[in-house]
Amino acid sequence: MNEPIRDRLVSLRRSLHRHPEPAWREFYTTARIVEEIRAIGVDELAVGPDAYDPADRMAVPEDHRLASWAKRARERGIDPDLFDRMAGGNTGAVAVIDRGEGPAIGLRVDIDALFIEESDERGHDPADEGFRSEIDGAMHACGHDVHMTWGLAVLEAIKESNFAGRLVVFFQPAEETSGGGCPMAKSDFAADLDYLLAAHVGLDHPTGEVVAGIEKPLAMAHIDATIHGTSAHAGKAPNEGDNAMHAMGTTIVNAYGIPRHADGMTRVNIGYAEAGSASNVIAEEAHMEAEARGETTELMEYMTDELERTVNSAATMHGCRADVEVVSKSPRADSDPELQALVSEVASGVRGIDHVVPAADFGASEDATFLMERVQQDGGLATYLIVGTDHPTSHHTPTFDVDEDSLEHGVDVLVETIRELERAHPVPHVEAPADVERPVDVEGPADAEGGE
Image (cartoon, rainbow, N blue to C red):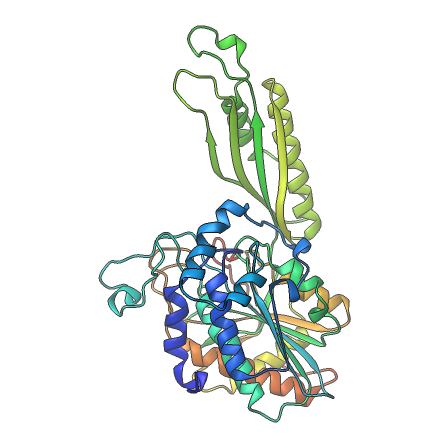
């Protein structure tokens, strides 16, 4: 661990890529992050329940779904004390460098992976170069391995500098399920931050391009629904059954008929559905997983309420009953123009960055908005920036990969932005450089939240 992170950005990213863990299962990932943070040496390090209140978590899997991931991490030899602190899926960490007077700056990076089997085909660099996922059915298909590398490298760079102020780096779990942003935002570590930076790699922006701040992220809710009916013999006495599958079908058709709203964009999707046990049995139970999104938090709530009403009405129509649960949600929060302008100026001077977009519409969802909202409500400024990378296929696909030049680009943009915030504190008022492209609308990927 004596070799500086800056000199091993690629190897660190590839190491993290080989060991992907989905939301609230990031046991080994958290241990690896903590190992690096301890080598850096920080003023405060909090892991799991010391970093947030576990009761504030959302979309936490049942214990039996965590067990195999915990077992795998333990078998890899992670620190037993650290393992115990993460019991129940309390993963993630917060690291603090406190240098007294100066701005309080937060940096949020996410750490979870996706349930995707990574490609082993020739031409996919992780497979060709030996750092493909070692975990069947899981993959860093959205660049969170890059984000973690950025967070660690920025932490190291600031530690080694003469920075004056307080830097708080949130290594946030469970972004893909919108489950981890809320507890991090409610924690004491998020209190009284003057600035917050969140960052993402790629999102259809090429290597050498930086978007200084996103606008119009969609507020989003994940919703699970289970319909309970009555089974019966499908041939002998179908009239004695209450068909949960039929109720599910009615729900799906009617969900897409929920009226759009005059106040802005709305979205609904039933992404997963299962029901029944055999061809000759009236289905007793049906389960659906859905999402509702809106251009504002209020519009997301409208779609969520309408979807819940639709499920309950369909169940009643077919003599069934429904249990509907909002598993997680995230609000809308836009980047602040003052901070976007400062990032634009900084990024335009970073080696390797040849194109800066001051602002772009996001078109997807992200639970970093919880932290952004908290900082903004406390009087601070926040931005969610994008560091471009050439990726051969879209996010959330088996062949997703990044141009590793973007590792250094991201570190430089973030470090220089933090140092410029230090110099500009208390409030940055920066005009965008004349040669920087003016704001444009850029549609985000189909699903950049866990959202992405």
